[in-house]
Image 1 (tube, rainbow over the protein chains, first blue to last red):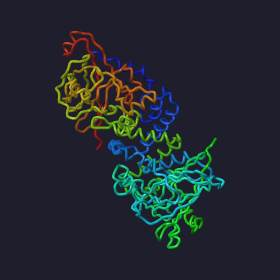
Image 2: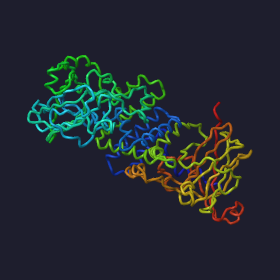
Image 3: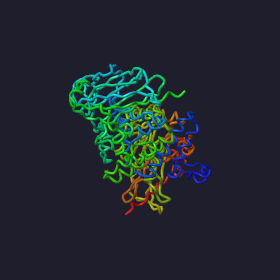
Image 4: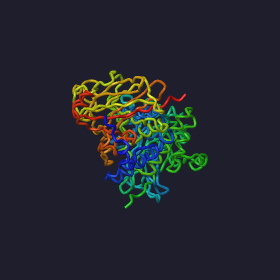
Length: 304
Length: 304
């Protein structure tokens, strides 16, 4: 049988660099020579470089690598139209807030963004100023008001406020179909020439993000709790202004300093002041005792 | 209405550092103070640090971030018992080979590892030396032989070789149930005291990894082809030795330098030499013309 001139032929290929632990990043990046999408190449270059860096830092065993594969697979499997576990993972690892921060660098004074969250519903009903968006009367009464202004403090007329929040048990209407009325604790309000808004509702409560999936397990293994501090969501926009997606948080909430999704900013924490005053309650159209919250939203002009 | 002593109360919390673009990594890592699993903390520390580094480097738009979320979600959705798209992603980004390399650092001279791949089947039939593992007679005949030895060149008796490969169309039996016979191109062979092995089969062909999922799209956007160069899989083990999971590759294959999963190593490329010799064909029990391939597997002792 012929021996095969292996050693001679190997000399021909001695210049080819096959994949090794040492050259791994360069070897994979070199495969993008034919990539025509410059942006995609830039993104993949960063992803590949840092993926390999993680592997080199942690030196996973084969079993650990397989656990990571399983974790990602289960995260994909649990996603459906009502649940997005990869967004939850992004949220709980601070990635969502980082992307948000990078995309909303603002001049000092404009209202800061925070995460949209998974419970926004398009097409909430339009309300009249002063309307009560709590449709089932459940919870501690809240009267909230303020103004939409530009960065010079001038009122923004015709600004639209899209408002939504959880009930006193920490659930959104969409999480409790048949228990909460449709569009409970949601509403669209439009400002007049004075930029003012005011509405009635109930005080929101802290709540846990879903913990029955892979992200819940990950949080537990990290030694973390799943809670978000109590907040009210707002999207505030107006023609000629950059819309802001944000929350206001209830000062004093237990979880302000450890929001599971890192959404809290100093400027978004406001006082929910408790009042016990029958006459004032009657004037505002709420039951006594009640909470009062005030907050102004500052919009920046759309860049030309 | 009471104004709420907002400015006074803010002074109380001035020392709390909420999440910002600048402190993002430290802020998320600080949440693992209660993590009791030191290894998990180490892994997550690395993952979080590099995830944030990617975001800071590429500064994804909100739409790009959502595309990444969708890509991961679709990758999870397409996984089932017969398909593991996250492993495919790991393979095509060089992560699998890097994990393999890190877990199989070997003394010079021992046969090098490469990826297991998705087509290994446990419980393949045990064969006699010289058996033909090609059950449907389809393809160019191959006679392969060699020895299993230790790093001093001494034969390893009782070594088990688990062998599998694609047919001449580039498909494994499990990809073509009903077309290829069960356990086609698979078999277990056990060496005698001389450490020798020999078997008959057909020459394998290059083939594409699955391209109808998210990873296929990713490869195309990266400007890459999905092909693996022709190879035969081996797992070689023996009592008292570290088992090696590897391939031998067909020297001269078009895709040796651009294996879609980065599995090629210099030492694993061998000659498949074509012979046209009726007498030799008859002696070896193959049709003329035929290919001959020779390769020795070098095992290292299990560390004590």
